[in-house]
Image (cartoon, rainbow, N blue to C red; front, side, top):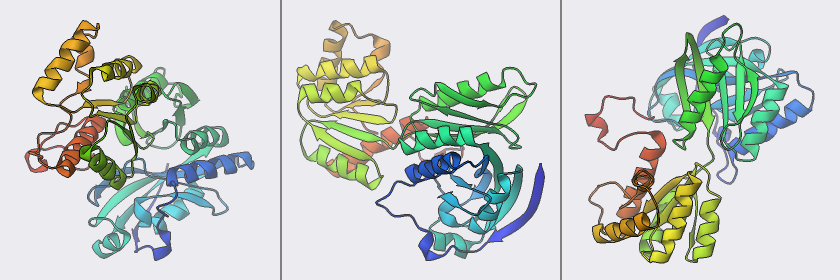
Length: 359
């Protein structure tokens, strides 16, 4: 694997920002499909192999392109463009890495929290894999791109349960595909987009998993529901309120791992919707209410045949113990618990933890 010299990235130009009215992930998917259908034998992709600094950044960073210079996607708000754009064209033919550093002023101008550096991995993505990944991203379905850390082999997983497997990592290493697929499916159960570097057997892999943006279903009316939808919108999540039981049940029965239920209405008739959610087995199920309300609901569900193990999947009272008093503060506590559950993190102060900051 060729290794190129470190490059210091300057600040990106102001026209590199993405429009808030577009979905960059879907645009990336459409570009991958277009290039694959256009006869491109292989497409180059650039991913973040490891990093230090920058503060909190989103997982699943991906830049894709063709040898002719077309690109789609974005790495760290464009701060790596001087390194990543040339790399993506070259990577269509040959896997390689490139070290890049972004100075403090350039990082702040790009919209990052602070300076930092990264090792970028560029590698080819065959047209068939690009089509599969592109279709999933464009249609907002779960997808994973897995490669060996040297970029010599790649695997794409798509579908609600990542059941569709495209490509292979195996080159005389039996069981590598199965181990990589299992790792991706375990991460999928968290319901969050993630970038993970891990070892499967004796092989180190880079795994990018993309999960659709959360959609919050608020069942019941009131100030807390309004505040919750406003908070969800700030996070870029979709959301809606329903008050009809049949409509709520239909929505929950169609839940994906990315979906979030917050039940505000205490009426016993909505127990049926919670049971539907438990049987569906996907998404975050939360219910508001006092200790007494929670206890009464629990007894009704147990009488209806729900098991203790199933009951443990209902977050109730929903929200973290932040001392919230107002509807807006309660909304913050609820989305905070959702974020923690999706990332597999326990709620504690960053200053009291020793794990990696930012996912």
